[in-house]
Image 1: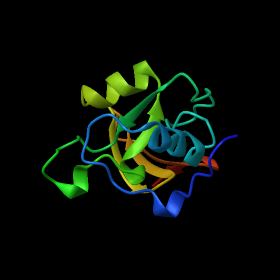
Image 2: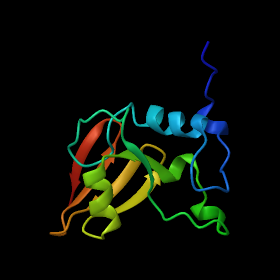
Image 3: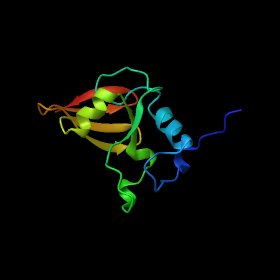
Length: 115
């Protein structure tokens, strides 16, 4: 039997690696798809990445549902290297800026280009 995951009550964690419940909640929030512009890759084997760098002493940068997203290695590296910039808006919505300056909003319903 699988326990129920109560998304609104997921507590922030003062640890780098999310617990299993928080990891599953992150994948569930994104409907099991990668959170990168125009991607439809399944999130099952992807990393759960911090959108804002984890800082153990800053509650805004703790490991929490609004700061986690499933990304493949290529997207994760592009973000970490600074080629792509990502800013979480709400759990399930991220604004991305490409290396050429194009802006996109990715949510559970897909990608839309921002002007």
